[in-house]
Image (cartoon, rainbow, N blue to C red; front, side, top):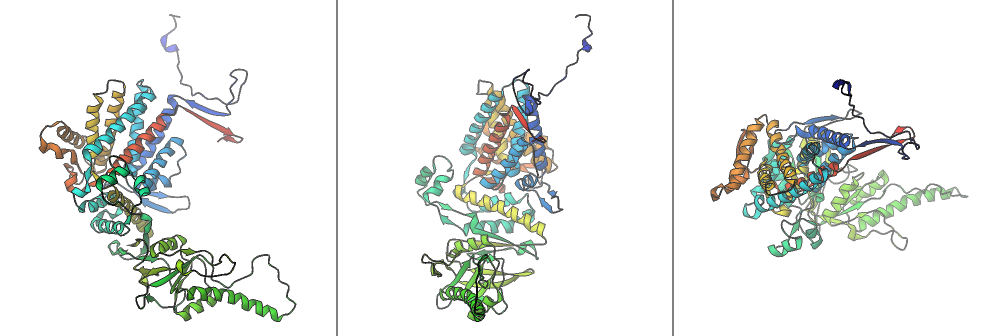
Length: 593
C-alpha cells in the first residue's frame, strides 16, 4: 500500500441518480432521477441568484430598465420587479418560489418587489455557505427565524414614526419615493399629488371585519381601535379606475374626482353629447349585460308555418320583443344606457327618438365599477319570477351629468358626480403604448403605498436606513446568543446590507465606503447615550450626491408595513428553499417530466 504513489488515487464526485429499476440490488423503484444533499442546495441557490441578478440592476431611484421581447415580438419595457419576473418563463422550481414571492409582495403591499427578491437570494447564498461550513440547516432556519423576530420588534420599537405627528406632506413623500425609480420620477411632484388625491377620494368607513383583517401596529386590530378611539377608514383601490389615452404630455393626465370615465362612445350621431339632471333630479344610468339586437329564435327551434302571411307577423313580433324591452328601460327613467353587448340600428332609432345616450360593447369590469360608483347594478336579465319581463328602477345608477369628451383619437363618456360609494378615475396621457403601460404600473405602486400609509398611519425612513440600522442592531443582538445560532444571526445582519450596497452600485457610487459610513452612523446612534444622536437612526443614502443624510427630513419614506412584510416574505422564502435536501424528477413515458 505504501508503495503506491499518492496521485494514483482519483476521487470523482458522482451525482446520485436512480433510474432503470433494479429490484435485485436495492428493492427500491424510482422511475426518475434523484438529487440529494448539497447538490440540490447548490442548484437551488444558483437558480435563485440568477433570478435576483436579473432584477438587481433595476433597484433604486437610478435603477435601469429591462426590455422583454416575447415570442411574437411584443415589447415590454419596465423596471418593476414583479412585472419582470412574471414575464419570464422560469422552469427551475426553486427560482419559481422567488417569482411567486415577488407576486405576493405586489399583491399584499404593492411596492418593494425587487428588494424582497434580492434579500431572499442573499439569505439563501449565505445560508448555503453556512451549510458548507458544517452548520446544520435546522440551526440556520431557527437562527433566521430568531433574527426576523428581533428585526421586526426593533423596527416597531425604534424605526416606526406615526404620521399623525408629522403631517400630510409625508403621504406625498411616500408616493414620490415609490415613483423615484420609475418612469414618473421626473414628474414626481405632479403624480404624487395625483395619487394622494385619488386614494383620498375613495375613503370609506371600515367595518370591524376590515379592521380585524389589517395588521395593527402593536396589539390586535380591536385594541388599536379601542386605544385610538377613532373611526377607522379603508381605501379600496378597486374603486380607482385608470384609463390610458394616447396623445399629449404625461403632465396632461388628470383625476376626475367623484366621477368616472368609460372608454366608450355614443352608438349613433343623433344622440345628445351631454345629459344633465333636471329639476333637482339626477341622471339615471342603466348598465346592461343584455343583447339589444333584434330578437331571434334560439338554435334548434323549428316553426312550421302554413299561412305565408304569418311569416311577416313572426318578423314583426321579433322586432316588438326588443322594442318592448327598450320601452321598459326608458319608462324606468334611464337617460343613459350602457351595454356590454350589441345594439342594432333598429333599436338605436328608439334611443335617438327618446334623446338618450347609448353606448355598446362596453367593458364588463368597467360597468361593474361604474355600478358601484353610481349606486346601481349591472342587469344580466330582465326576466322576473313570474316569467315575464320587467326592468327594476332600483338597478339604475345616479349621477349629476354625463358628457362625451374627445380624448386623443377617440371619444370617452365622462360621468360626473356619482351618487354611490366613492369612485374616481385617473386618465393617463402619454406618447405611446409602452410609456402608458409603464406609467400605469408606476402609478399602481404609488397608490398602494399611499393606501397602506393611510390605513396603518406609520412609516419608516427609506434609502437603506432601515436595513443599515437592523444590520448594526442584529450584530449586537447576535453576541447575546450563546448557541450556534449566533453565527446565523450575524450572517442575517450582513445579508440585509445587500440593499444599501446594491443601491450604491446602481448609482455608480463607491458602495464599500458609503455603506461603511452608514453603518458607523447607525452604530454611533445606537450606542450613544447622548439624546442628540437619536436622529442618527434615520440616516440613509443620498444617491444623487453620494453622501449620507437624514432621509426622514429629506422625505425618503415608505410604509412600515411594506418593510416588515418584505422581511417576513424574504425570510420565509429563503427558509422554504433551504429546507429542501432532496429532489426527485420523475420520468414520464417519453422521458423526463
